[in-house]
Every structure is written in structure tokens, then in C-alpha cells.
Length: 292
Ligand SMILES: Cc1cc2nc3c(=O)[nH]c(=O)nc-3n(C[C@H](O)[C@H](O)[C@H](O)COP(=O)(O)OP(=O)(O)OC[C@H]3O[C@@H](n4cnc5c(N)ncnc54)[C@H](O)[C@@H]3O)c2cc1C
Image (cartoon, rainbow, N blue to C red):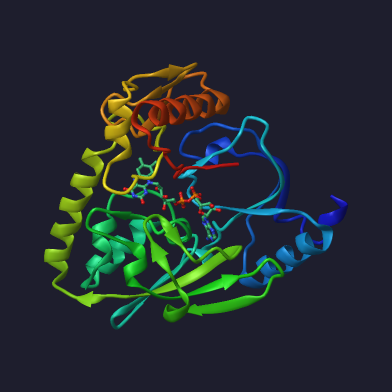
């Protein structure tokens, strides 16, 4: 591993990515690393920069489809403790980019800090949620974010303050290489009421997800004034299949994968859905899921 001399303890070669993704599909990463400190992350990023190695960030893998051929370059995973810390101080919560969003939400509710409970039921990490401004009908993560620490492609760490941040539907200006951590400014509320609200929101969000199917992901963004699911239904695609991938029968914006499915099955089905929806409704659906 010549290019990663000195990083042998954190860098692995040819690491299968399927176990890290919600779909449980896809090939391996040429290089994969779980750095243990911010400083080590920075040195690793600099080494990749010097060697011209492309870096991708993996969160909880709940918004990703990894192609069967896998990915060239480096995949970074912020699983080590310093990237998953959550600290509460007054009305503010600071969370690492690798922290589970669900942990942040429940810690805040228990501490009597309200706001983020509207996101209950969304899988993934804080970094992934900030990158795509994850949200539900009741709100999104961006509205509670006051600043974020990011790392650039040259390994430099910067703080992005609220005035510098833009959030829109499933989009944010936080497109730096790594979201290292973020601060959320929340509202004081009764922990018991917050916990009840959290549970209610969790039930409402989960009710919209396919039941019993672990390997299912919502694929498209809702276009303005419509839901992607209703357009897919209108195009007659509920239950449509490609190999072992199927348009979910209870929520058509999800693709469900069965035993023996490949990423190619999913990608082909996505293409069929896009083409048919455009043909039959005139709407060009935009992907929410990222394809690597
Ligand atoms: C069953 C199910 C239900 C869902 N429901 C919702 C919903 O209601 N609302 C909603 O908004 N989404 C929903 N999603 C989509 C998904 O959960 C969100 O997009 C989530 O925020 C993705 O987070 P993740 O950590 O899994 O990111 P990943 O899928 O791992 O990555 C997504 C993107 O974020 C980037 N990223 C991840 N971590 C970092 C980091 N630390 N720094 C920089 N970039 C990073 C990745 O590079 C990639 O570009 C759902 C998904 C599933 C499977």
C-alpha cells in the first residue's frame, strides 16, 4: 500500500461497501478508511490530494446506490468515536458528522431541546442529513443549524456560520468534502412532551416507509406541487420490476430489492421509471438517491 504508507492501521484495500449501505448492494471501494481523529483525517485527505486520489464520504448509506463494479479511489467513513460525539450546552447541541441522526434527536428531546424531533424516523448520520438537508413534512435539519465545521479537499478545517449556509428542499450549500460536526440551536421545551412528539413523528414517518422490507430506499425528490409517488402511480408503475428490484407496492417512491438483486437491477428500474413518468406525465423526476 505504497501511497498510504503510515496509514496502514486505518486504510483497507478492496473493502466491500454493500454492508455499509441500506440497499446492501454494490461492489468494493478501492481504498476505505475510518480515521480515528480529526488530525488523522486531515493528513489522510492531504495524502489523497497529493496522490490525485478521489475521495467520497460515506454516512449511513441510506441515500446511496453503489454500482456493482464498486468505486475507484478512497471512501471515508466517520465511525470513530470523535466523529460521533454529541454534546449539549444550554440551547445548543453539537454533533459529529458521523453521529446517528436518531441519537442526536433522542438526546435533544431528553435534554428538553425541541426542534429536531420533526426528523424522527429518518435513517442515517448527521453529516448525511446536513449534506442533503434531510426533512419531513414538519421541517428539515437546516432550519436548526447554526454553524458547521467542514474539511476541504486540501485537508483544511473551516467553520461555516449560519449566514454562509443555504438550505432548500433536499439541498444544502454544505458541499465541502467532510462535514466534521455541526451546532444546532434549539428551543426549550418539556422533555416529556418532546418525547411524545418524537414518538408520534416517528410513527407518522415510519408509516410512509415500506413495511417488512429492510432494503428499500426512497429514490426521487418530490417535484414542486406533487409527490414523486403519485406521479409513479399515475404512470402505472406500482409493482414494476427489473430483475430483483421492484417499485414498492405501498409507497411507489421506494425501490425494494429482493434476494439476488444487483445494483444494475435498481439502476435499470430507476431509468424505466424516469422515462415512463416523463412520457406519461411530462415530469422529469430528479434523483434523491446518489449513485456511486
Ligand atoms: C427507509 C428510508 C426512509 C427515508 N426517509 C427520508 C425522509 O423522510 N426524509 C429525508 O430527507 N430522507 C429520507 N431518506 C433518505 C436518507 O435517509 C437521508 O437522505 C439521510 O439524511 C442520508 O444520510 P446518510 O448518513 O445515510 O448518508 P449517505 O447515504 O451515506 O450519503 C448521502 C450523501 O451525504 C454525503 N455525506 C454523508 N456523510 C457526510 C459527511 N460527514 N460529510 C460530507 N458529506 C457526507 C455522502 O457523501 C453522500 O453524498 C430515507 C431513506 C430510507 C432508506
